[in-house]
Image (tube, rainbow, N blue to C red; front, side, top):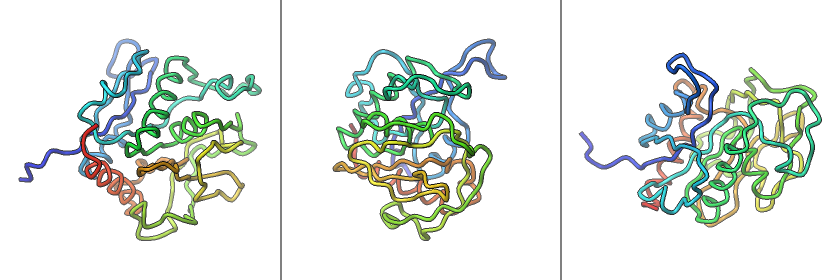
Length: 234
């Protein structure tokens, strides 16, 4: 048995009003997401969103950060008022914790993988904005995404991957320091590289949905964990 410690991957927990395993509110991480990190060789650890944004202390001993999917971001965070009744799950503490962690991880060049809401959080953290509700949303959509760049750096053996989506918002104004590397047929960004000194990417789709059966989604997690292992401890 390999005695090498798994790199610890911080997953910022998501507030849930209730779950089948709790009597009231909960802090959750998607099971498939945690299992995908584990299968790639990482140790997923869920963090409690709090007002303590001292990430140097809180993430001491960690090697990577994963910003997962979740509810919507308050439009005020990107200078807008709500313009749709489709907004859901908005929580000021969740927003504050996510935005703080995203800025910290990018500034420290910690290996970072941002998924769905996390993808949108990074965009907003870097000065971008969102389409609050797409004309044709991508809930329960599986489609082929073609990577236009960074295929090798993402650890992919193909530039075409079957991607599972569940989102009703999209990027509008692109944040500073982001480079789009995949675009949906409708024209919105599906993936970007975060241009800092480290390994950092955002995906609008959910690679965990089919990583157990789709090689290329698993390859992304494998590269993320590998980069985290090389990074060493925070």
